[in-house]
Image (tube, rainbow, N blue to C red):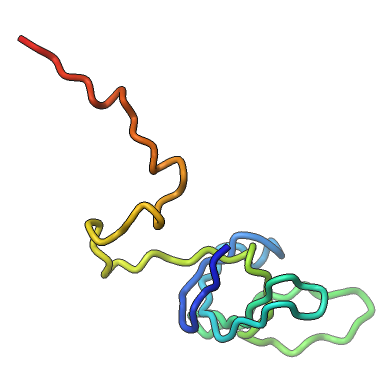
Length: 109
């Protein structure tokens, strides 16, 4: 996966179920960090704290809008300012690069 730049807005697509769907901003690329292969330091775009899971028998953690997460859990949001003509094949998913010959049918009258 590509390295995300500072300030990139992403949606969380994996990890804790409570975090899936949240929009976050990339604060820092940490790379290999603790047991994570490709870690990022992120914060919620809204400023609201991340939902927490309260572990039984542990003290209540302090709510925070910043977390460390894996790159595989992040998908960058598309910048609406980038015109469709400016996007290249590298911005498209591999299946979107294929040309569908079924759409190239020409009918003659």
